[in-house]
Image (tube, rainbow, N blue to C red; front, top):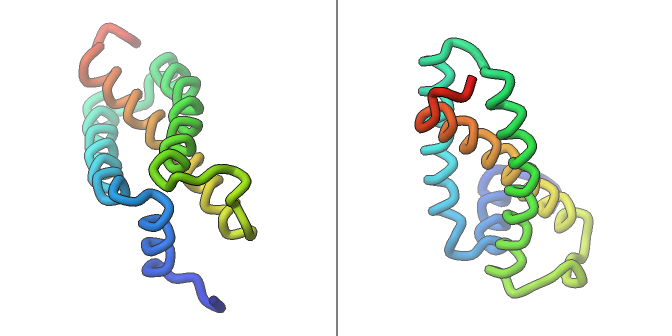
Length: 115
C-alpha cells in the first residue's frame, strides 16, 4: 500500500466499524448540520456551553473506541501495525469531536437558558 486514498480509508473504517460505519456517517452529517444551525442562530460560540461540550466530548471518544472494539470483536492486543494505531486514534478523535459538536448543538437547541 504505497498510496493512501479515500477509498482505502473507507474500506478500512468499514472493516473496523462493521455495519455501524454508514449510520455513523449519517449521524455525523446530522450533528454537523445541527451545530451549524446553532452557530448561525447564536452568531458566536457560547463559552460555557462549549466547555461542557468539550469536557464530555472526551468520554465520547472513549466510547467510540470501545464500540469499535465491540463491533469488530477485537481488542488492543489485535492491533498490529502503525496504521491500526493511527485508525484507533482517528476514531477516538472523531468520537471526541463528534460528541462535543453534538452536545453543543443539543444544548443550543434544547436548553436556550444556558449562556
